Amino acid sequence: MEKMEEVVSKKIRSALDPVHLELEDESASHSGHQPFQNPASHFRAVIVSAHFKDKSLVERHRMVYDLLKEELKGAIHALALKTFTPEEWGKK
Image: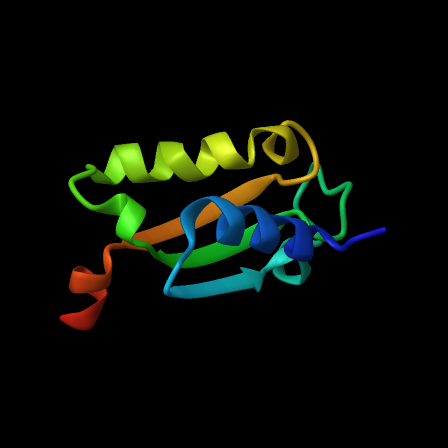
């Protein structure tokens, strides 16, 4: 069985073809947080993709949430996102 981090990474890479992807499993720091049912349920992601060009922050986040809608129904409890175009990322 694939780890949730691998599932999330594959879906993001497949749909958004990111030039940069950081995916951090923060579940251990939330182990006392209820409901804590899945050992990999809290993630933080930095995604840099040309697919975000001309999209608002809300639109970008919706794109990612739509990709992970099944996982967000239960396996993923929290997902913190930072989304950039390659041009925005290059200015950092």
